[in-house]
Length: 307
Image 1 (tube, rainbow, N blue to C red):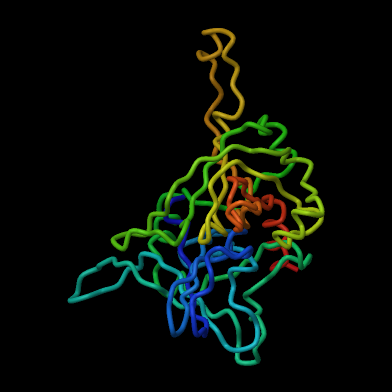
Image 2 (spheres, one colour):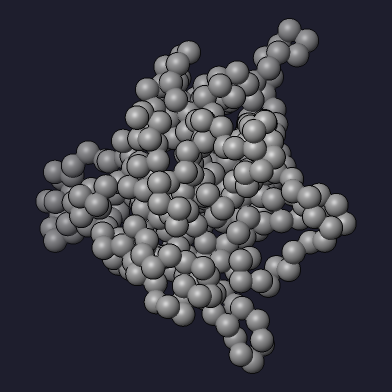
């Protein structure tokens, strides 16, 4: 799961670095770095596999719509992964930034890129199977060898969430690259902990003031979490441990007949944070509330590849 979370980057033309105190940055746009030249935009994504075999299968990169470069001109993104290669007759592994085409010569997103059908839903999926197999992604090799990987069956439905007892107050884990922080020696993401703040089965309606501040839609199929979200956190994987979500601790005999452990469940994807305007400081400040789109929205985009 750790190696399935990846750092995404691409360059955009700009003459100066954007203000990190703007509303868009507070909401959780990709972290940007640069001055007087091209800006490097960084965000998070994660890999989900489907129908995986030694030489076949789909490798989906799940991220946010707002992280992708816009249409208009040909553009690739770079995905930071461990790849295998042969050097001096030996198999070696190294961290590389692999280019994945996103916008084609016609200035339109390629057929490998799918956005959620609702333009206000901030979820996007790219089928990167050619890049993954062609460049021998280590996470892909490990997935085939160990049979342990994120797959579409781990996307929790509202029924699954109910049966697990997941709700307001449940602890969740976030894997991503807040503020684009990463260790150059490896591809391990940063693990954060949060708490579900609103009912994940009901969705969430934003009031008019919040919609104005963060340009949020009126309703999302998702929920809020109590967690620190920063630029670069967008696209982070949100999971829950089903073995800790619901527990019967009334008697010692309960542990004797403990049911088999269940796999982690993917609850959704981080899309940004909610700021408030501090009148005294005359700036937008984060209040530790993150916006998460549900796993159902991810599934809907992935299913569009099969239609």
